[in-house]
Amino acid sequence: MRSPVYLDHAATTPVRPEVLEAMMPYLTEQAFGNPSSAHRFGRTARAGIEQARREVAHAVGAEPNQVIFTSGGTEADNLGIVGAALAARDRGGAMCVAVSATEHKAILAAASAVCHLGGREVVLPVDSGGRLDLAALDAALIERPAVVSVMWVNNEVGVIQPVQEIAGRCRDANVIFHTDAVQAFGKIPISMAALPCTLLTLSGHKIGAPKGIGALIVRDRKAIEAIIHGGGQQYGIRPGTENVAGAVALGRAALLAAKEQAPEADRLRALRDDLAQRLKTAVSDLVINAESSERAPHVVSVSVAGADSEALIMHLDLAGVAASSGSACSTGAVEPSHVLVAMGVPRDLALGAIRFSLGHASAVADIDRAAEVMPMVVAKVRKLAGVLGRV
Ligand SMILES: Cc1ncc(COP(=O)(O)O)c(C=O)c1O
View: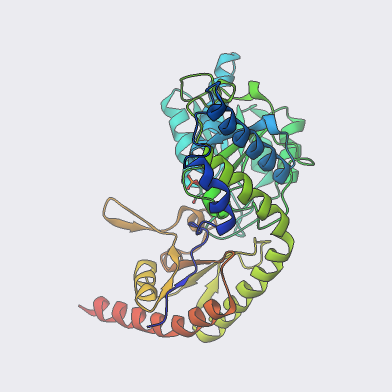
């Protein structure tokens, strides 16, 4: 039996061997110490953390003392949004946050949490290509929200937001800008050196580090307040004994991602475009979501008319191809992806959306396999849908 093909790198990636090698000493006897301990074991661990901070900072064009390690992208997003709202309240301002409609659930749920705390959220619309409505941003800025959050690259459709433009408008309005760069990092050039943003989110497991490590880059510590409380680690912004091995892994993965970004982007784009073209040719009534927008090279979202995305994913898996659906099963009923709904994609196409996402390990053979099995899978799912529809 042929080994299965993994085309779900936007969900997570395998740990890269170089990364595993770098983190191992911090899990075992050589460097396992608590970085807050004054003895040599602690000092060795502290040195590992500080090195990792320098590496992450270097990879994203920030300063080492701006890197706050977190348990992942979700926590970094929450710290950015809720932390900025709390800091605004402390300054006597309003706890209002403005987020785009196509943000990851980590941001959307954090914005809802701000409402539960007595604040307010403004959800900024996108156009049919998934790009932020800049007029809506300008209108929201008049109210001087505590923070504006717009992701750099969307995780479902790969759309790249004009973050330079958005960050500039926020700076001119004197409003803090946060960007979730989880899907951008390593895929498109990103640097905070030229971007006037105060807060930026990274996640390790999308770039070959393990799950459970991420970072919020904080340019101005006054911009946020801690959302968890404990010892004074990480300037009190994110207390708790640091995940040393995870931080070391993120540092190494970040350096590799930054170094390899340009050639890797070209390679992935060629593979992705080949897959998209072959799917369009082989499957009737298949559309590429956000096809005309500028998109990151590792993601393609396709909608198949007359097929349900959960069934497509299941049958693709049976055929040895792992992809993902954007739909969410809440309260027993399948709901279309909020991203596609925000873009105005018709409901039947949104319910038939699946995402293929590529990564470091993706090769031509993976694309060949997906292109080969997809027409059969779609035919099967459409036939089943027809049969069920008649019952
Ligand atoms: C854009 C985006 N933001 C945030 C996250 C959450 O990151 P983590 O899984 O590290 O909590 C993800 C993960 O899917 C993501 O794609």
